[in-house]
Image (cartoon, rainbow, N blue to C red; front, side, top):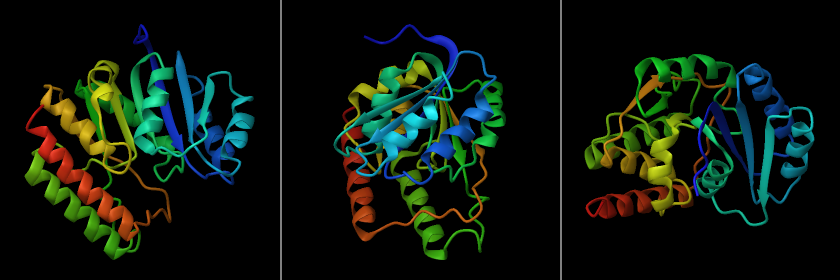
Length: 239
């Protein structure tokens, strides 16, 4: 059964193999949002085999609004976010990657933009931050290619789907999350496509990348993203 939503904000931070940094990262996010009314910060350890859970729990002891969820087997970012959402109750939900490639200091402004726009979903757009010298050339080419393909296949009103900072009205997640089939790299894409198909509204707003941030993509990851994208496209005809 869904929770009765509160007027607050839940921040869901999926984490995997981040033992060296997770405690500091949780503390950093907590410092930004500590004065927000009715805030929830939920860290989801996605089956890490290092000390991610222990370090996250250590950080949680210092902040009463921080909760840590953990399970023994890695299931993918999509599954982690579903677990975190099930444990939340806030009427507004933020997805934030725990590596903090997207600095949490921009959360207040991003949330204000979401409220100003009055949309169901606000997606972080990092195009302007992926400047030469900040992101590897191959990574920029792959990112832009993925954007172009998705624009053709799905005609979403946002250019980017994979950025690790998004904010949602709770209702659209309650309507869409239970039916999601993708658990890993294309989870964000399927979620946005389903929300859009159901009549949800969405927009994007620029976000800042941390200095030196860069996401590596293996050939296996690229293959899985391409495969899942096609699967989402084929399934979307039946939604």
